[in-house]
Length: 118
Image (cartoon, rainbow, N blue to C red):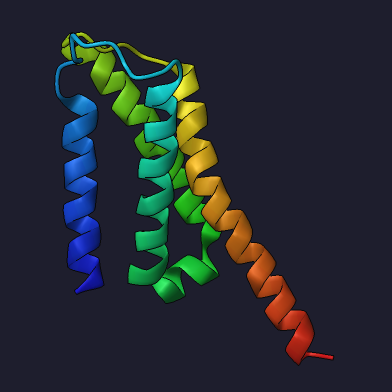
C-alpha cells in the first residue's frame, strides 16, 4: 500500500512542478525553495519506507535517481514555457530535501550498527 501511495505522491508533485506558474506573488521570498525541500523530503521518506531493503542497500542509486528527477523537472519547466524557468537553486533545494532523509538514515544505521556489533 505504501508503494501505491509513493507512486501517487510522485505523480502529484510532478504535476504540481509542471503546472503553469501562478500570477500571485509568494507569501515570502524563497517560498518556492521551501516547497521544493519539503516535496523532496517527503518523497524520500516515502521511498525509504516503500523500498526499505533497496533503499538501505543502495542509497547511491536513489541519490542519482533523485538528482536526475530534480534536473528533469527543471528542464521540463524550461522547455514547456508555462511561466516557469530552469533554476539551479530549485535543484539545490531538492538535493537538500532528500539529503536530510538520506543523511539521517546513514546516522541511524551507523549508530544501530555500532550499538549491536560491539
